[in-house]
Picture 1 (cartoon, rainbow, N blue to C red):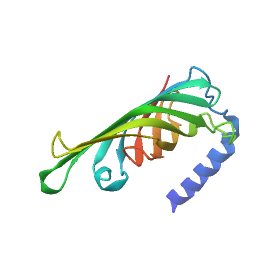
Picture 2 (cartoon, rainbow, N blue to C red):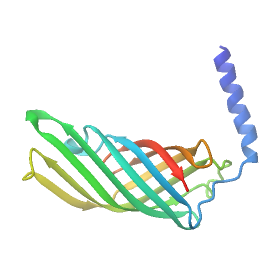
Picture 3 (tube, one colour):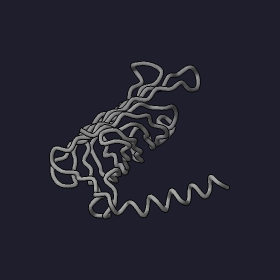
Picture 4 (cartoon, one colour):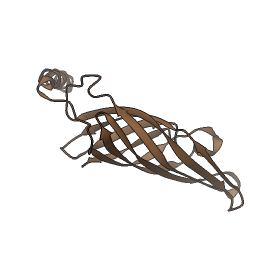
Length: 169
């Protein structure tokens, strides 16, 4: 019961004190680097395993970033086949902090789309598949200090859910 009361007091305290924070500014020159893991995917061949991903976002104007994304996933499956997939591409994001009037400078909510090349192979070099597609993403970052935080993204890329660490420069 003490934990429950403490949690309620903590939430009330955070809500009451949130008015003293400013919004996180996303302007020209703002830089983010995300490093994480991803799970899920679309279809039989991309749904398994845990992937690794990285992305970089660079502020080009108020509330808009552009950048790059890359990911890799490998896992074993039926009949000793090893499934490997990777994607690499460019992306753009709109940051909703100002639009939503977020009352904290530690959070960043964003969404966007990009263009990526996806490659998939299984069983050997002769069984390769590649295509260009338009992935979408929606995500958020929360900063524990001025430059380091965590991020979570949902999207239509190599992994449906991405989680990891984010750095602001």
